[in-house]
Image (cartoon, rainbow over all chains, first blue to last red; front, side, top):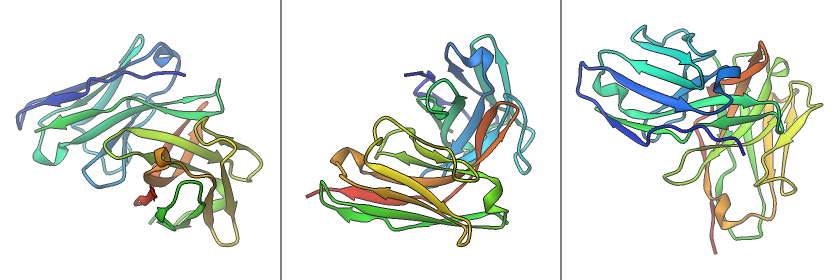
Length: 108
Length: 121
């Protein structure tokens, strides 16, 4: 099955920048979406279509893509950004499934 | 305000059955695909099943195919997941989520609060 690889963890100081990568051989031909999941809560969509932000998501959260790697960048990190982050693509080649990355735990 | 409120979880023995429900409000339920996902304790997100806006198209992940059945009721604005022949590895928090599909891709733009299902003897 299709795999999206993320670094397991990342530690960042308040006010600094967190950069989370998501790699996979279909990334280049797919739209990538990102979710934030705070402890004990449901995931929240923070980036869709590689770089678009849903309403309510601050501008310091951004997304980009180059080749087969997508990147979620969180600038001026705050304590409230401590969470797990997952990338996701939609795979039409197999049961129209939602494929998630392995997840990255960001510690502030 | 979009809301998805899940219910129906609990403790069940291996081989048993459980039915999860997800009540939707704040949007036109019949216009969106709906989905079930799950998260085993300490693990990542796993897609379980999807149903199209009309109910005409249904998809399942390999791990639940043949055991779980997804359905929806546009009168009650509700999504369901009938889970049969449950196994210990089905233990997880289950989420319902709305699918927003356009431009050849789908994302999950709103999620329910999560329903705990524990399969244990």
